[in-house]
Length: 410
Image 1 (spheres, rainbow, N blue to C red):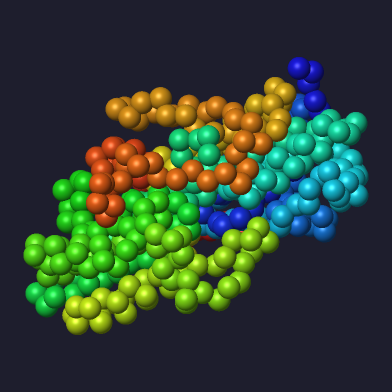
Image 2 (cartoon, rainbow, N blue to C red):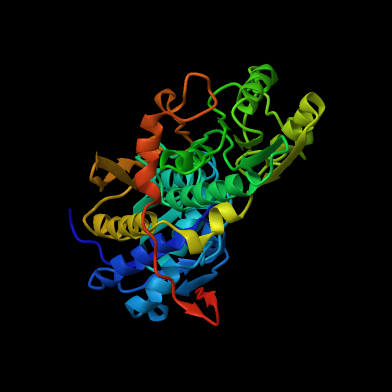
């Protein structure tokens, strides 16, 4: 493969995570190591939307030393901003892509890196497909991120490990708080996860390491029935009076309807995903009516994805590695692919970086496998725990100023 010289552009898309900026730092490191081929790296503000509106920033002058990059890695959310823009079908709207290519030509962009989840890989796939039909050489590589951990063809996704660590730590603290009283009570914690219950599954981790864990866990992968829920609670009350239940926001009835559907606004994003919330409140009302005990519910909400102070070192390290590896692979000719993680071993834990065709990843959903969910559908198996445990390991020593972590603002 011939060497390709030209500038690069990087963007962040979709929901932010505690590790998405570590991937950005990895891209910056990768470009810095290949200045002979990539003299300039532009950051798209608010993803592809920013590039279409000519809102870009030159990144290399802002991150000339490793200290600044480490500060970027400990910064939550997407430092470049994000978007949820769905690109048109390249076969139906060539004018859109013609304009996009013209903009790439203006800045001599030859490398395109996009950090995101399922929908972001859709952008990578469409751009890659269009480039095959025109006389403009550019290499396009996706870099995964999502706290949902539902991307196909990768062992796990950056952002998930840190979010799982936050969920596991927070649930262990909630369990301790709820245990101080002897009055029968149920606390229901609603956790992000529309179609896949990976993040909710991490609520099982405290109980797997000798701490008191949650009593029940419900994922979208198994149908939820109120009859089974009632029986599960009755059995749990026989063990102790203060129950903690972890549920995914996307739990569904056997007919496929979201449990919280009646509480939804009906609004959806550009990719047709409905905004979810309310399952916890539905179950709260049911428990109050059925058992008459003290009950409360709440959503962990945004802290799941932005609690960078509790990030997993494993997560941040892998996120940066995927970013830098994407750059190296692109300079060697890789395009139309996503950088992915392939687990080599559990003990000791080790993953290697591989590259998968992005066309088979875009818009696919990787669910929690059956062998990770117990037969009753209300807990996680030892196999699931073995998969999850390494991903939350390790802590970073953060840099503080006046008592607060330093965040990089671009």
